[in-house]
Amino acid sequence: MIGCGPSGAIASQNAAKKGLKVAVIEEHPHVGLPEHCAGLISTTGFRRLNINVPKECILNKVKGATFYSPQGIAFSVSRRNTQAYVVNRPLLDQYLAGLAQKENVSLFTDTKVLAVKMGEIKTLKVSQKREQHFKTKVIIDAEGVRGKFVREMGLAPVSRGIIPGVQIEVKNAQVNPEEVEIFLGNKVAPGFFAWIIPTGENTARVGLGAHHHALKYLEEFIKNHPIASKRLSNAVPVKKFGGSIILGGPIPKTYTHGFLVVGDAAGQVKPTTGGGVIMGGLCAQIAGKVAAEAVTEKNVSGGRLSAYQKKWKKLLSREFNSMLLARKILNRMDDRTLNRLFETLTKREFYRVIEEVGDMDFESEVIRKILLKPTLSISILLNFLASFIPIKEDKKKNVQ
Ligand SMILES: Cc1cc2nc3c(=O)[nH]c(=O)nc-3n(C[C@H](O)[C@H](O)[C@H](O)COP(=O)(O)OP(=O)(O)OC[C@H]3O[C@@H](n4cnc5c(N)ncnc54)[C@H](O)[C@@H]3O)c2cc1C
Image (cartoon, rainbow, N blue to C red; front, side, top):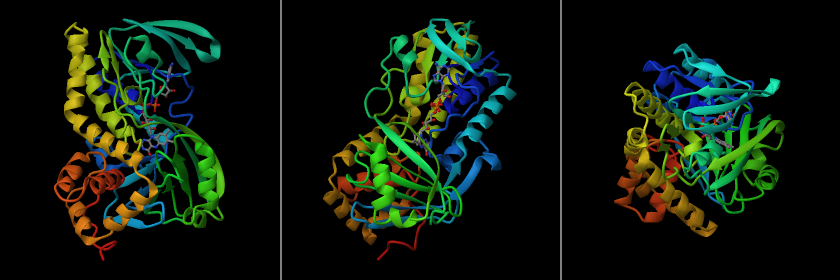
């Protein structure tokens, strides 16, 4: 297994559960570090993965979200129960690695994979500059967005729809700890959105993704955005981090002879929000199981391993396709259109429609129902909103 992010940990745990001897190779000395994530993850997603998140990994619990149009028109959704956790990602990754180790997975940290070929991985013990070779029947590549080994094995890596994301953790922010705030607009965050994710009573993660100059847009957002600047007028930065957000959907082929690709490396990330922990985790569960079955049957051919792609596609391709469509259309919308759509959205008729269904990770049902009623543009926007917070049950806000 290459990489001990959530996808690598989950895939190895699932392979080991089926009796396989598994080694996970992680280049950093500590799992989960350096950090690069906003850490907003749906509770239903964790349930689907069958993960009971320990208390110490949960920084905050979120029940709702407010979305702002470029002009500041607000659309709020809040529900009675917790919809998402804001997690401490390093601790979560370490917890997932611990679950794998409980299944007897061997974890090699401070060990960088240098090269792969069928049945063999060449590594470097980083601190000692010592090379080592691992023999293996199947390689599962969970290396994240870089995709170096995807390319080496002759597959097409994630190449389109990658944008930079930057984030600052702050204290002394004026936030509602139960609510995430999402800001749209081509002048705010062209090609994506900005977020304020509360991590506690007065602490938050403030970030954005943008096609270009993400840090410049973030500084502008904090200083001058009419709503955000008020929330953050006394905010003190604690730490800054960032990474690559993947918005282009999965790569076309995620297997070849003796090799599977999962998680960010396979582009298994929601094109609407850039969230990849749940989607990657669901695919990683399948990858671990298929790899273990293939090794047990002594058949790790591409044909046998293609079962992995068939299974994750059956589970998720409808979701990925509808989110990809939403992302494409959102990226083409100008600010005037977005403002108009928000105006329409706050009307009762549309609000009723989205009350009916809601699921942060599986949005195609939301879009299917709403496509029957409003215009395509409004349904695209709703699909986007539903990917942050399930949009049913809220009776109070926005209904005029
Ligand atoms: C700014 C930002 C905010 C985000 N916010 C969210 C969010 O709120 N919710 C959400 O669900 N997702 C979010 N994501 C996406 C999420 O972080 C990823 O989808 C998720 O981490 C993917 O997990 P993974 O295991 O596939 O890859 P990674 O977490 O990237 O793990 C890959 C691992 O492989 C290791 N590795 C790489 N190369 C080698 C090598 N040669 N040898 C050994 N080890 C190697 C790396 O060190 C790393 O530990 C965000 C991403 C960014 C950039």
